[in-house]
Image 1: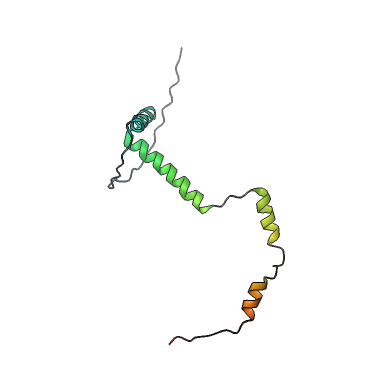
Image 2: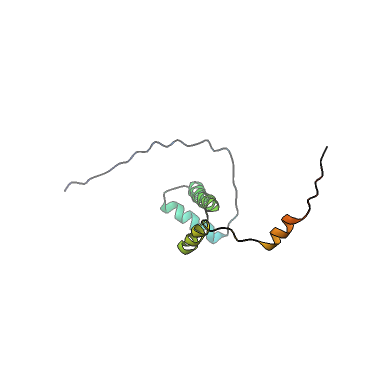
Length: 104
């Protein structure tokens, strides 16, 4: 019987880690994190840093996007082609005499 062994090598450039992050955790949380890190074959620090970095990327990405339902998007898209509706309050304000003060 012949066994096939696949070995993958990766060249990873690690940035020098000079900052320190500390946290406090409940004992049960610490045990769970240590267990998960061991399953991932990572140190606790590496596991937590990877998890936090992934979460940070998601949060940053979500803050840059607005997700709406297809019906809402379609209605918004159609409304861009419609003429704007007159706004009575805006019309009143625009009709008032303007006060201009020149700064020196």
